[in-house]
Image: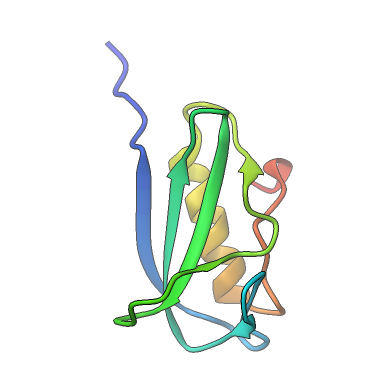
Length: 96
């Protein structure tokens, strides 16, 4: 029996030079927490926060399509993009 996909993935990352681009406040940098949540419409919402802060910001490009069963793979691609920096946004599905 296949293991069900998690509904949410969360991880910490240090943003690379140029940080991560958000819809709410523009670029954020430094130590960030990234949360990727599966929605019921086959999209995922990606939010970021300064690690330890209360406010969450929508990563530009979110919500994004991600095939069912690929949430963890998509989340890993988001973490890699933020780690790389350059105004990281939610990656296209083919980047996962």
